[in-house]
Amino acid sequence: MQLAVAGEDRLEAARAVDDHWARDLSDAERAATEMVIDLDADEATCPACMTTFKTGIDRCPGCGLRLG
Ligand SMILES: [Zn+2]
Image: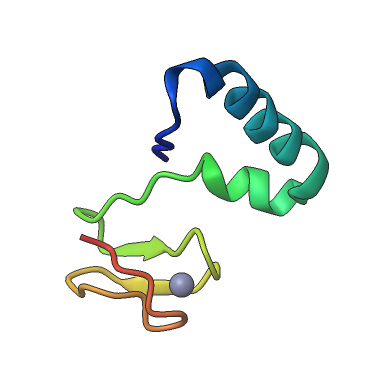
């Protein structure tokens, strides 16, 4: 994730992101951010919708998340 803010706002922006992370995300959403998709494996699991699919496609067949 990238967030562009004015230099003087950087600490407040970082604090707001941390607060959102701690307060508003479910355990499943936090776990999804840690997932790694191995597109060289035969199958992968989408971190957005948890659909398991055969690799070699550009988008998740479950939710359309762009994979590459
Ligand atoms: Zn998906």
